[in-house]
Length: 531
Image 1 (cartoon, rainbow, N blue to C red):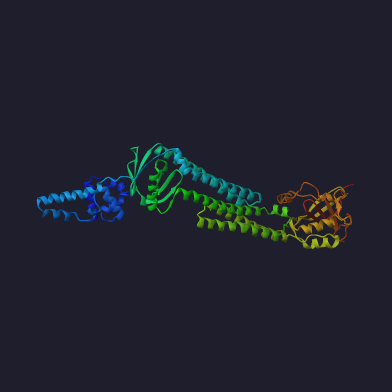
Image 2 (spheres, rainbow, N blue to C red):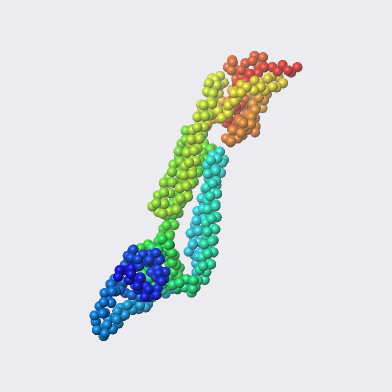
């Protein structure tokens, strides 16, 4: 008779079903079937558990029953009785009731549920709130600076996080409701033996359960509870109320768990580790969010230039964006290190860092492309003509943000102005702007102020397309220019208009408060319609 047949024989003799045997040895029905069919041999600890459950000795599972019965056939009657008594005493010996070394109880209430689970959920919702603020912040910035794709992506992430939080909250409430429906005011009694914990309940819905210390793979002790996670696949949570154990019993229970569970943290270790971990987490969290914050701050390069007096040149923009990219890269690297080395939940920091890195890279590429486009529209020969013939220190670093070459006519009482080109220039370097304004405001210059009499200044008007561009860049378009200069391009002289000559003129209009200039090339003839 093999081992499987012996298990089946003793189980049937003890009138125990396969399901009951599986529960008593804390195993599955499938495994018990495999044991009896001799497909899988149980481990030594399972053999011991089966022997205890069936009320037999471990030797009875190891020796052949047929040989024992044959030995009885060849003895005398007295010897046969004596052997039967000896065999019966050997079988009944494991049935000696083992006395538990400690007892405790626990009552399942809403307060117990909150004590076990609510802290983790509160931490989750705090992290959700912080990440949501980050998504909103980046989305607003992206929309303000016309990065619609990034804005939509962040909006989608934000909506996803809200939906996820709602689902998590619904699951939490559902789990809490089911837990209370199932366990509310259920009281369980724990008896602690050398190898296992026997659990009985005052509710008939819950049969007697036995958990072995060796199956506890993690235990965390707090001030009030010892929470054990049993069976790595099923993740059964066993909660022990320390207040129902006396001092001696608590020491024995703690020792029994510690001897079998290597991943055990007692109350002192837990508090100490929590404090240490909290400090580490705070330091890591602060460091990561500082890096992310610096990255976000660097994105507002316009504000930084205005506050620090930096020039809004392409070189400075590239430097700012490269510096801005360093911060999220460091944040991502530190986030990965924090997660791998310190097991710190830095997923959100990594995600925000990646988003900011993408924004910085996108802005850098946008700045480079915009610079190439704007510089390609610059009329450098015209600027050189202005420098040479007007003694105006025109900046070398400038962008043509608007250019129109369509010929349009403006008819007034005295003349008709034929507009050939219309350009708007903005200047980037602070020193060059200061030099320009110094020559414009010089009393000996030919620049005229807006309050002086000039018939031609009426042709300086900003159309809607140009106005939209200027407003997007933060320039004021509500007032007229501060200074005007008229240059005859045929004679290269600064003089008044001659309606009869048909010469080509250049009109410059400078806006002092906004540092941009409008350049208009035109010719004019008398308006013969006027009598």
